[in-house]
Length: 132
Length: 370
Image (cartoon, rainbow over all chains, first blue to last red; front, side, top):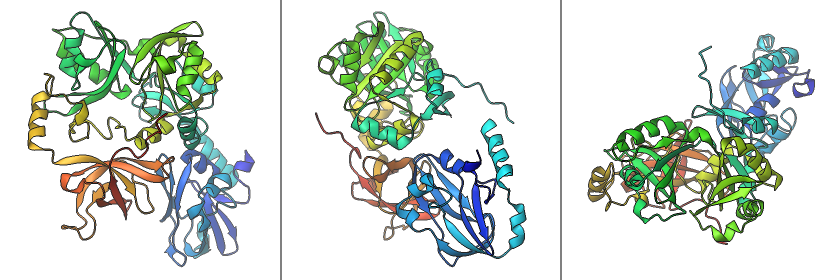
């Protein structure tokens, strides 16, 4: 289902997405991740101005059942965080690719973009996960 | 891939698939964790009526003139006070006072006692129960023969009564049981549960479980999974075996002293009498989170700042989750007696972040009396 994984985004195996616009990437978690988590009750995000490296833990999502880390899909400096998620974690479940964005990064290593998956590759990856 | 042991399925497995349930492994069983969502299911049970498939739980039956004697040897509560058609909550202990399992004993007749045990413990429990009562009244394991549905919520008793065409809500008291018929199927309805709400648990022969399940859902009960069952029982502060109690904890430490009747002789009695006389050194406490963070199973509990020694690890969280009805995150854990008084502030290590938590007395949620 292409609408579950928009074509204009890049994806990771940890189920984050990145929307890249020049040197700025907006980051969130995918529809698949949201559905796996179930009811989301708390979202923790990094601070603006922090520097993160690819694969660093930059936040966490608590659902009723469990807690999951959010990893930086790319290296950069945190420009903005979606602070309303702190009080309204339901944005994440309702609209993971727009209202539910988590962090905006100013990229410091654009070469890392090549390591991310496109929508089709990610959809295949998810299908594989679901088979297990 | 490591070989996945074959998971057991209840008689309602196909019903869960048809309802689109998300299935997970639980204690060797393939069970629904949720259908629509944990929060919606939790709310349905608090506000209206929900139904859980708990057919995975174990049924161990003691029959004959010495049935009562056999069960009393195994459990800490007083089986002698049970009359026909009544049930009681209890634990079974090892000789050292550690908990084998918690269970409910139903007296169906003077020579017919049913013990319902946790699904993940059936094999261990039955082996223990059979070996300890072999010379008195050996039990039978009827776990595979029975389906069990828990219909819970403020509307549950009326809903089950209507299906049974009997006024069960008024004729069967709390922890009572009665036989009835639902859609031509013979069932036993027990006024017990694990949610903090009123309701019935319905025992039905496995092949007829689907018909009763469909009737209960047709009458408006919302199908609920193990996820909501866990948040509901935690808000009601009901312990979960394997988390809050196990063979390393005693019922006295777990706050279950009310099910330990030392005037009887049972396995573990002497150890528990000794512990009671000496006083426990640690206690299972309930706590509410006072900051951002949700305590989870196995998170460390620390002393608060200002305490000497400050920040020391003094215990572990045994259960923790958001409390959807109470509106705060809650949890249970063992701490030294000196830190167990209500009002004590502890700190929970939530993945590297210390979050204050306050010890509170009693259940986090208590239903309004009808």
